[in-house]
Each structure stands twice: as C-alpha cells, then as structure tokens.
Image (spheres, rainbow, N blue to C red):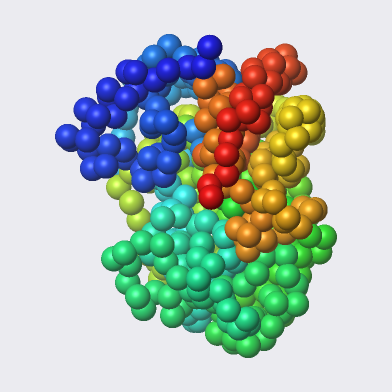
Length: 447
C-alpha cells in the first residue's frame, strides 16, 4: 500500500506560520507530495514522522556517506560536547583533522576550515584573485558552487538565454544579486575541450581561476571525458591560472584521495564539504603551500567565528578514519553496489517499456529519463541534459518510488553510502518493482 504523509503535511502547514516558505532551504519545497519531516535514521534507512521507512539514497544531499546516525560518530560528537561546544580559538582536533587531510589528498599541503562549502568557495575565489592579481573566474555551465552571488553565475542558464555565440550567458537564478558580479565570470561548456581553449585564449591574462565539479553531480551525473581535466591543468599551468576542484559532493565518496585521485589530476585548491563532516556543518579549503600563501600572509582575509568548531572537528576525525580504514576498497565497493542498482532499475524500466538511462560511475548516478525522440547515449553537458531529460516524468516516478519506501534526490541523483549492503540493493529493487508498474500505468505526459 503506498505511503501516506498526514503528519508531514500537518507540520508543513504549521511551519508556514513561523518559517519563511515553510522550509529552511528553498530546494526542499520541490519534494512531492509534501516536504517530508523525519524522525530518525539508522544506517541506509530513515523514518519520517508518519512512520514510513525508506531505503535512503538521498543521504542528506550526499553528506551522509557513512549512513544515518552511525554509533561511532554519535559517540565522538557526544564526547566532545561534554568537553566544550565552541572555543573561537584553537584545539588539538584542528591539527588531527588537518594532518589527516594532508596525508590523504596529494594536492593538499595546507587547509583552512569553514562551516559550509559555499563559504569555502567564496574564500577560494578571493584567494585566487589575490594570488594572480586578476578578476575573472572561469566556470562551467551546470556546475554548482554554492548559493552565493558568485557561486550561481552561469549555473543554470535557461534555454531562452542560449544563442550560437561562443560567449555563454552569465545569468543568475535569483533576484537581488549584485549585477556587476556577472562581469567577473566566464562560462564554458563542460566536456568541450576546444570551447574551453577558446574561452581561455579569448581572455588570456585575465583569468584568475578555473573551477569545476570533477564529476558533475549537481546536473545529472556527468563524468569528465578522457583528458578533459588534464587539459584544464595544462591551460592553468600555461597561463598562470589557479585550478580549483570543487569536491563538495565527490570528496571522499571517490576514495581517500577524492575525485582528483580517481581521475588523476592535481589542482591548486580543493573545496571539501558534505562527507568531510558526515552531516555536521563542516567544510574546508585546501591547497598547495604556494596556493595558500596569501591566506598565510593575511593579504587574502579568511575568517569566521565558528571555523574549526570542535564538535565538527570531532565528527570529521571519525569520518576520515572510516575512509582511511577502508583503503583501496573505496570506491570499488560502492561502485559495485551502485552498478547493481542501476542494472536492476534499468531492467524494471525495460519490463514496463519506460525510457530510462541511468548514468554515473555507480557510487553516485543519475536517472536520466529520455524525452520522446531524444538522442541516445550518455548526456555529456548541461544543455544536453536540459534538452534530453524528461524532468516531469522523473518527478512522477520519483514519487512512486517514494511511496514504496525508496528515496532519491528530487533532481534524480542517487548516492550509495558505506552502510548500504547487497541485501539493501535487493530490497530496494523489490520495493521499486510496484513503483515502476504504477508509473507505467499512471503517467500521462502533459499535453
């Protein structure tokens, strides 16, 4: 029997009277039929206030790489809470976490801590401009770098803004941003080496940094084509540009050396968030000694009252030790589980003649649902995704899955945690079977 959400609906209605929009992050309003309220979690499962149980592949937007409420993480936070919640000063945990990061990630020689990745991105942009004396940041269409004014420039250029011009639009999805911010960005196509080269050549001597998600998890799950990230490194070296790898989602999910180890490149600066804190508000910017020099000198200001909060540091130390302990088994194990799930979902779709083409390495993947007549094959960039993916159809299937106890991110991304097992994948596919059947029977495209 499909789930019902009476208590979540009541709480969401109640929230309208005291919380703007009823939610504390705008994207949460996308959940259908109602933004859910949760009561508890355990490993790969969570329960909402109506008592509905889910096999969870949303995982706190990817932060819960270790699953829900791992006992060791809870104990580490509790132990620190008894010693102190906040110092606005130093503690030994800072050294312990920083030393682990420096040992795990070859490109990282020094770090600074923040409360969220949006802050770390802001610090990286400032640092790159201070280091190079230049103003422009090159970013890729569809890549998400936080919700600040700078992070969203060119993120989701609407089709109405697309032209044949080699200069891509620099739109912003929010009202109230500082318009002049757009003048400090260049937007390029992901996975298009020649377009990237033209952009860099056109703005030669003006670009401070090139930033990217190494695997584009915020728009579909688009891996880099062979040699693309190496081309970014080549251009940065040639023109004195700083290379910024935004590993907010990919960090540690792709192994101890993060996606940069998985794909084989070495950035100047790395952004870490989500999995670094296991669900606590924790992030970091790391880089080579040369890249971090302006922070050391104080010429590029980096500050924050809650930076290096001991509760978050205690959580991060525990999280990083889990990654270290698994060694080379990551991401082999999570990739294998993800690929098994992808294959099973694809088989269910084929049984019901549902267009379905999941893509990604396995540890994370996106459920692309091709529109009628759309080109086949992997989606390679943001514009292909927008034009080929049937978002309304996915929204319907996602709700069918949700009401059978399978939860993925609203935009279509699935993540595998270290808590998932083969038995969980098997159960997920059993639960998904009636959801696919219902979707096939009920879905009617808009006229």
